[in-house]
Each structure stands twice: as structure tokens, then as C-alpha cells.
Image (tube, rainbow, N blue to C red; front, side):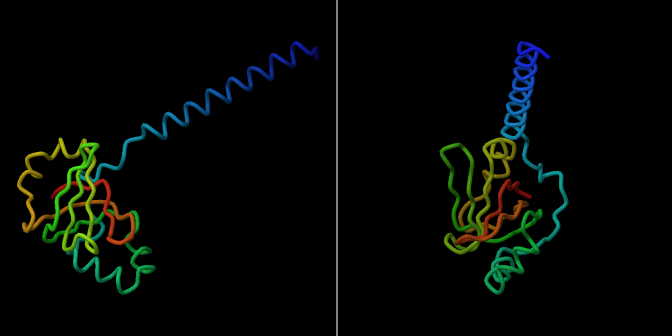
Length: 144
């Protein structure tokens, strides 16, 4: 093989690898999140029940609930709108409760249901459990 032919093959392999890398990155960053409004909740419980399980044994609770679709209800303690037009609604306690995060697209989609949620009212959300930091994190939440 001549050096020109070898160089051409190396360039084509490099370009195909580059194309594959950019395609993979584009797919990962634009991948839609799970649509929990269409999923059936794996567990249905109150915010205080979920909180007590995590306080009792967080390792076992993580094993049981992590990345599962949970349906959680409780008393709303705070409603916050984020800069990206998403929302975070805290159930039971603002520091050690259940934090339900809603994406901006879901806020628009469920605007009428979310407008009725105020501090002190009962609310129910379905979301994916992301574990416990100071409070239990439910992400990609939708109101029920």
C-alpha cells in the first residue's frame, strides 16, 4: 500500500469516528426523559411513610425505591418556581420532606392542575426517586 492510500484510510476512519461521537453526544443530550404520566407507580405511599423509611435505613430504602416510579401524597409546605420555569414542590417539610421537581414542559402541560396547589393543601405526585440528600428527591414529577 502506498502512503497516500494509508493516509486516506486513516482520515476516513477518523471522520467516521468523529461523526459517531457527535451523533452519540447529540442523542444523549436530546434524549427525552421518562414520561411518568403514562407509567404505573411501582409504590404508592404518603410522604411521611417514605421519609420514615429513609430515616430508618437509607441503604435499604435506596435499594427499594431508587429509580422507581413512586406515587407520593402529602401536605404541601412550599411551592417554588425555578429560573428555567420548572417547579419544586415540597411535601411535609421544606428541609427534611419530599421534594418534587417538575420540568418546565410538564409545568406547561399540567398548568391547570398545578394552579390549584397551594401551601397547606394536599397534593399527590408521581415521580422517579433519585434518593435522599437533605430531603427525598423525586424528579420528572407529574401531578396526579
